[in-house]
Length: 233
Image: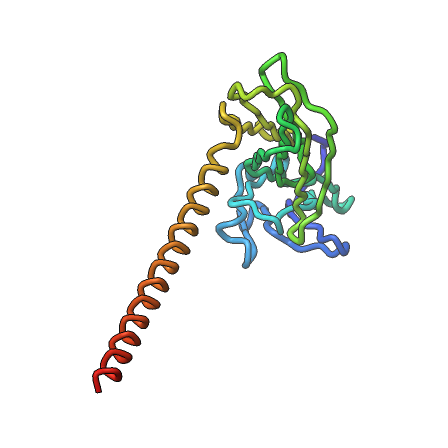
């Protein structure tokens, strides 16, 4: 915006260690130039000596950081502008419900992974239900993301098929919500499967007992026949 004689505009990526890497440049003689290693990744949107902007395609983790825009002027040298790119990452939360020791309580936990750390909130639409004993744990992963797990006890549950929701939020990223319904009969489905499994074990055991009894009866019959043959002899 100043009345300077701009010879060239150069874009640079500033590394965390302070090193600068040239991405692209523009001047009247050569026009637009994208350096090797960045072709197809960096493109000019506005190419000019007074107004110059670039687009970064297919943004990835390594693209995060600060970028420098150098207006090389004569005879004053370069005027530098600086802008930084921060990546936001948010995955769909995982909602889990498990049985509590109390018949009127249910343990609910929700985990969400993002970068930076997301905000995880549990909620229930029923007015007669409420969360208590909330706890939140954060774990930093090797890829720079953070997994936040919120666990709470749902009280006031009377087996009415309550719906539980979990919302994950992260700055300007759209909120992600998931819902899960507690079965009206509690966790009887799981116990029913356990009963079926127990019944199968009982049937298998009974089958082995029957086979053993048959074997014993056959052996006794053979022994009786051998004894009879011996007496006749």
